[in-house]
Amino acid sequence: MTTIKYYWEDFTPGWEYESPPRTLSARQITAFAREYDPQSYHTDEEAAKSSPFGGLIASGWQTCSIAMRLMCDGYLLQTSCIGSPGLDELRWFRPVRPGDAVRLHTTVLEQTRSLKDASRGSVKFRWDVLNQKDEVVCSMTGRQYYVRRTPAQ
Amino acid sequence: MTTIKYYWEDFTPGWEYESPPRTLSARQITAFAREYDPQSYHTDEEAAKSSPFGGLIASGWQTCSIAMRLMCDGYLLQTSCIGSPGLDELRWFRPVRPGDAVRLHTTVLEQTRSLKDASRGSVKFRWDVLNQKDEVVCSMTGRQYYVRRTPAQ
Image 1 (cartoon, each protein chain N blue to C red):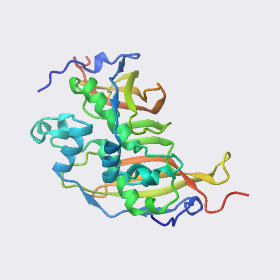
Image 2: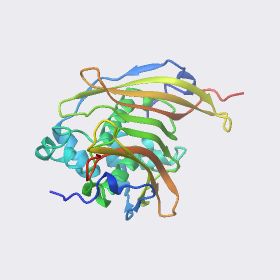
Image 3: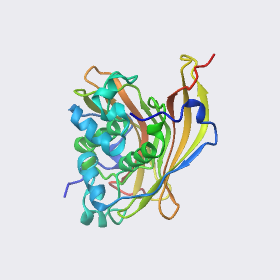
Image 4: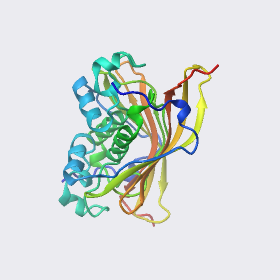
């Protein structure tokens, strides 16, 4: 049982978090892709060489999933988060290649009270995934729902 | 080596595809979540019972990843697809629970020539993921890049 440290109230605009880096191996890239995204530039190092990417790259869904894991490990499991309605924008700017070390940078954009439920609120975030060259490889904006520490009066 | 059957030219507005259903087990849900999204309502059947979802649900990233796999198996591996710049919108409307059978419905919204490269174009899609009750559990709009069968003149 994890203790909740952060509630809706704590995610004020400008709140930031940066995760440690996580290095992705060719084996991890192909394992994910064989199950979920078996395009040859994600599954086959040889075939990938003749693709427009010139070599193996991670599925964009794996990049998002790793961002989620970095978020969980960094702070989300210590929060009152109760899900997400989705994203307003998701961009894959650059490929993630074997050996790349990616990290998550979270910024709070907006904090919104729930009009329907005094015990909850939503938070709009920007999530950037950066590589070891500080290039943004993926960027998302979206919302998550959080329980409030103190219900609205 | 897969033969390319569909090029950019084939994805005219209104083109549709519907995949066969794929059933998700509790084991598959928790396996994905332990690696990528270890929130307790994704990893722990007991803990999930006292969550707002009342039971185990799949990570939204797994729903997207399964949609990608259904797309690959259904048509994408037979196309000239060379990646995606991202999504304009992603919504998770309903939870996906153990035993749910989800399927992908693809619709082409727009077909756009590349101004930079006569050999390529982009296609804007709507992708809906439906469950066995025909409820939309997840919906996305976004673009993919495709090589043209015949370069623009």
